[in-house]
Length: 353
Image (tube, rainbow, N blue to C red; front, side, top):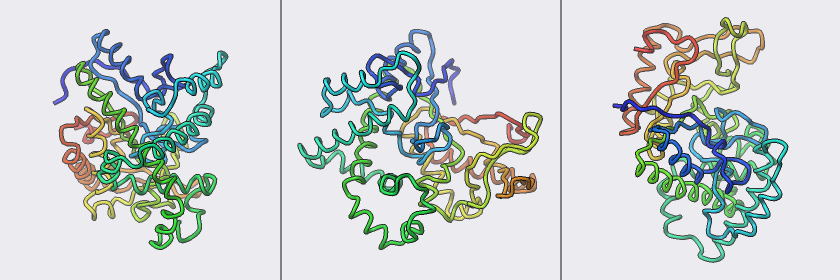
């Protein structure tokens, strides 16, 4: 059971300190934990931590629902990054007029991460700890690291426009790409390893100070994401998830997210959802499920701009059965991680129950 607790909701990128490079970073959680504790708060609730594309501003449309945005890493926590290089980077990013956008910070920070990776690799090679992390996280890390390397190679073109062998994930094409992009794949895996180490330190610090960390499970990965690319059969790319017309929007909302094929997800025991819950449980004490009503009944539109949308499943008994089945799978996979649900919009009373 969730204890009665007061908390604060704040995006990680908003946790600004004098040590960051223009946006909040993982190690900035420590002073936030101190601040929350001093105010008598027991929970810090965050938004999704994934990496969006260069032009993406929503944290609910990420390139991976598993990976942490490398821009969130704290470079001061990486051994091969010098204080001098951090000072130069801060001066370069210093903007007294307005907050820096993610793109500007990314342009400075990612090259520094790449240099840090090369320095670590040349100095020590592949550490046993890093190799162990890669092995333990293969279920999502292999696809993410290759996807991210391919996004660089193809200048951010959508995976749907990649050469057919890679687009359709033919084994020979994937094997060849892994060989050719081995360094980039290792580098993106390493960035997740560093994120893991920094996050583990902050999770331990929060636990020590009796402050819970809350995560946020976005409803779906973006269409142009590692997971949709890796699990193409589980998504209907001809329809987009959204909300029906209401008093706030007479045309409804189109979110651009691919429609889950719930029948196929059910056939494999909701494997992808279970993996997501397990990943969240390893990072957070509490997990907020975004758009929980969509697990029961998902509203979607086809590509015709004026066509009406529809609920899937269509009838209420099937909706109730589906939502309970998915939530049961999430609860089993989440273990001790506490689940809460977002309830914005029109939520039927039987969903609330």
